[in-house]
Image (cartoon, rainbow, N blue to C red):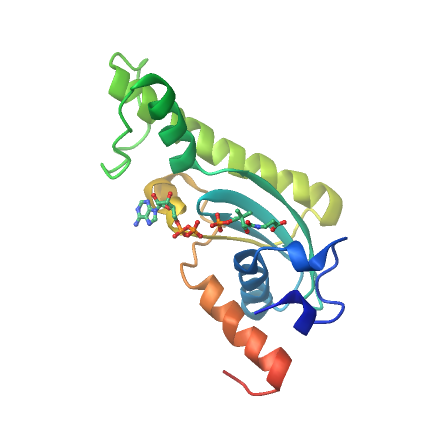
Length: 173
Ligand SMILES: Nc1ncnc2c1ncn2[C@@H]1O[C@H](COP(=O)(O)OP(=O)(O)O)[C@@H](O)[C@H]1O
Ligand SMILES: CC(C)(COP(=O)(O)O)[C@@H](O)C(=O)NCCC(=O)O
């Protein structure tokens, strides 16, 4: 899967440098919405990308992923990794009073806020009503915290691969 096989559809300065996962997710969003859209992919990195109404990749933002950030903190300090697999338990009350809860609270407060801020940033340039979609395994522990209008699609990359096949071969996958 390469940008070179999609002439004009990767509108960045160096299309060949675009991660294939970002290209796949953008094409998946195009297949899903058929319109301009914002893709939030929470994997090793947090990528927030823009796809145009005609299915082109139009640029995006990269930030270190949640798991990676906590691993870096652990490696530099010896602190434990927070247990995000524990169910959210609703809105927290009071200040965290253990190291574990302090670490966990950080992610639960920061992740929705960072994701919301990045989507708003893209919408400032591209349109306030732009639909957005979440994908990537890193979303899973935070799904209870995102607004209802922000769907999670774990198969966006696969939809994108199907779209890539359609665009490059004409065969509907
Ligand atoms: N089911 C899950 N629950 C919680 N975290 C997950 C889950 N699946 C993946 N992750 C986390 O998401 C990240 C990887 O997600 P993935 O979409 O596979 O990323 P990548 O595209 O970088 O391979 C890792 O940081 C991993 O810890
Ligand atoms: C930005 C990424 C590290 C994201 O990878 P992921 O988190 O999806 O595993 C990857 O898409 C990549 O290495 N991209 C190359 C640079 C670019 O897309 O501009």
